[in-house]
Amino acid sequence: MFASVLREITGYFDKRALVSAFFPVLVFAGGTAVVVWTTLAGVEGAVRSWGGRPATVQLGLVLGFLVLVAFLTFVLGTLREWQDRVCQGHWPAWAARAREPLARRHRAARRALIDRDEALREREEALAAERAAWPDPADATPGTLTEEAARSAFDRLDALPAQHPPTWPGGTAAVLADLVRGVRADTEERVGAVTGLVRRLDAHLSVVEQDVRDRRAEVQRDLFLRYPQPPADVSPTGMGNVVRAAEQHPSTRYRLDAVVLWTRLRTVLPQEFADTVRDAKVSVDLLLTVAAFLPLFGVPLTWWLAWRLPRVEGVAAWLTVFAIAVCAFALCRAAYRMTPVVLALAALLVCHTFAGFWHPVLRGEVALLWTGALFVLSYGLYRNATHAMLAYAERLRTAFDLYRWKLLEELRLALPDTLAEERRTWGGLSQFLYRGGTTDPDAIRYAHPDPDATA
Image (cartoon, rainbow, N blue to C red):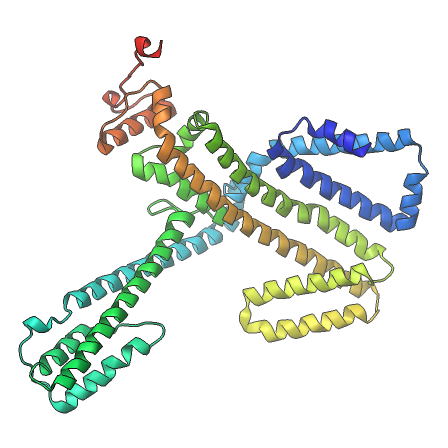
């Protein structure tokens, strides 16, 4: 009976709405109802009460509950855009006082990445200069190193490849060049030792260069994916910065306004690619929905249970231990220097939970712990949604990179021949669609398909 009614209700939703909205509402609303009912009547009493009702009453209750879930799903769908805007940092004016400190923190994080990229660029240039100064024994002239200086330089350079992490002090290539020049007319054994040193240091320098390139690529990837580039301002949320970076991509490459043209571009995307874009958005929506439902359903239920349960034992006790662990983990991440104090306090709370002392103070402690754990888990889901948004944003970039020509064809505009001409076309089109006019009318040239070719 339940399965047949469920099929009828879910038939009105597509797969993505089912995953991101209907089933989360069903699980949280149904779970809340079950917890409240079993707490009031006991598990056996709840089962006996349900089994004692006529089939028509059971069917009516199930149908009514599913209709309520369907209605809440529609409401959630209408609020989806609002939820996205809130998560992306588009807040009303009265929230400006909370917005600015968060935006300042993201500006500092972006500035730190830019500074780190600049430092790594300078390091790359310094290593390139070291590579350019690499000694060539065929062109070297006799040096003036003393025996003691040559031995000291050899020992110091020979120890360099063993260092971890790999380093390359400035001027190393010059010291090596002096050493090579100093052994040109020396014994064959000494020349062989220095030649082997040159080969080892050449391999070591390659390792250092690759390490710097890898670290710089990682920094640039974070800048590319997670933050809009200056002079664009940052959003107060990580998800908002990911979206702004994706919106900035077609603008900086093609002078194309992504906000204006995305609604038009997505209608001409191939079905297979459009499905991957929607599936990526479903992952984000699902995580945000669960992140919102955890405190929305959990906090009222938590405080009601804390004052309703006669004792903290069994499942409630282990849930309290889990809440203590979650809160302790969050505090240790936020202030790692306080880890010993946090762990000691967590152990004390665990002992207090299983000691059996159940009074109003402990009720408040349990309610606060459960509430704190719910918000920590909700924030963790939001962070995961931000990571999922990276995949969605990358698909948006790909859509503009690969299929922007289809939009020009649908608009009956001539395809440009050069990048400069393309930027001019997109700039003029974006102005025309957004403002109703353009400062460069010649940038928009119609190119209707040949009727004979399409016949």
